[in-house]
Amino acid sequence: MTQAILESDRQLVTAVISHLVKPGQEQAYEQWLHDVSGVAQQFEGHAGVSFVRPVDPSYSEYAIILKFDCYQHLKAWLDSPIRQRWIDQVKPLVQQDQKVQVLTGLETWFTLPGKLVQRPPKRYKMAILTAFAVFVVAQGLGFLVAPVLTGLPPLGRSFVLTVVTVLILTYGVMPRVTRLFYRWLYPKSLPE
Image (cartoon, helix red, strand yellow):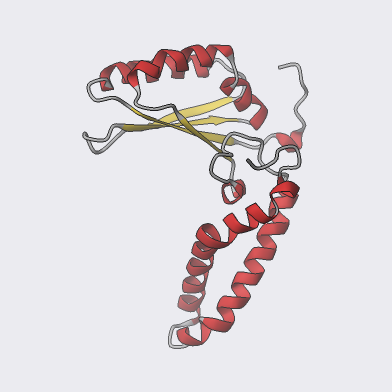
């Protein structure tokens, strides 16, 4: 890759790619997985691959967990003509197009449906919004829930409040914060 990658942009990135395999095509798909993984390993920055195979034989959804040392190297693989040929090759084996989600850490809170493969927001922006959201939720829970938990030991109260805070942030607050601040988080792309 000719473009220089800044040290601050080097952050391990993971792509989770899922395929729903057609019944009876599992063996051919397994061979495809083996072959395409060998090709991906030849790309710069490749940091490993693992698979989650279906546990329910009646629903053959596979997940490929692909790691690269930075987003630019992952994107080089995802956008490569070589990978596109492999995707074309697997289409007869799967029931629908692949689903791809790119994750590096905090940005999992900053993804919206249909906006999966894109460069994560700047870390300082994620940190600012996360700190603000945690502060608001923690203060609200401290006011509303903490009095109900007075019978628990301090460590137990802290644990319950932490779990409830994370659940509220993950499933309620952060998706809304992301929509509200989408243009600031992703200034080069507009929501559809």
